[in-house]
Image 1 (spheres, rainbow over the protein chains, first blue to last red):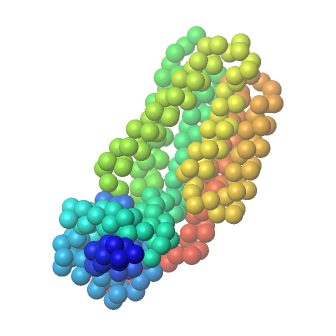
Image 2: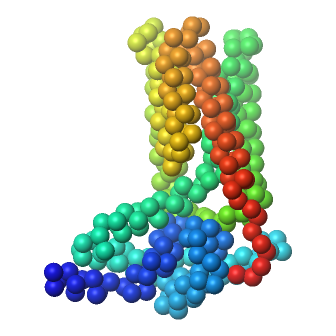
Image 3: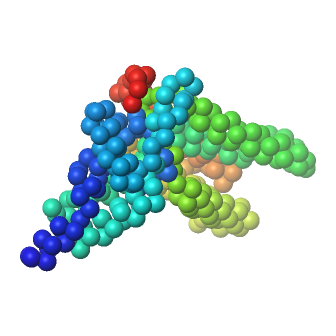
Length: 98
Length: 209
């Protein structure tokens, strides 16, 4: 039990938050996705999604780029190599903790 | 924390792949592809069997048809799907793997049909016996998650597989009718998916993100 608690404490806190976990998992299965897709799939509002993405960008897990689709601004998102490794590591540790 | 969390992660990981058919375009494209193959099976039977040109022309038309479907579905996604529910692109490795699997499945089915065409005196193995189950199973794989109304489509497809076996007119007729039947089923399913998608989604507001 003690060991399980220790393993849980070792989990990446940035990814462990449910909203960010959803974002990272969705981006892991895609090469790139835009803000609208993530908003649609996660059901989060723009403000919450933006703050989660800002946190993930801050730790280097997500790369954010601004482009245009015609005249419409588009925010493209991609999981970085560090983000992919962190997610894989998180899942490994989660399985060990269960 | 329990097994539910890992299950939830698995579910998130499946979503981008399922999103490819959120608008029914994949189902419709597959159905229209089967129509193309039916055309290749049907056109040569209308003209002189001694000439090779009808076969060549029908294959050229098939590739033109594939190009129309490929670019048409891309244009549809760009104009309708992406502005409503967003854009996703898939990892190159995943794209290659899917294409490779699709290629080998197509090769295996073609080889089996070719074998049957050569050995058509073997009445135990008719193309219809392969087309029905193959189309039904590929629909099950393509159209996930299987919503309640999609089970009705699957049931019709399974009934069609049985019906094809008893269809008179030889293996060529069975193959052509089978391809048209399953093509129509895929297109109808795609149209229902599209109608539901358009009903439940609106173009997003164009504001800063």
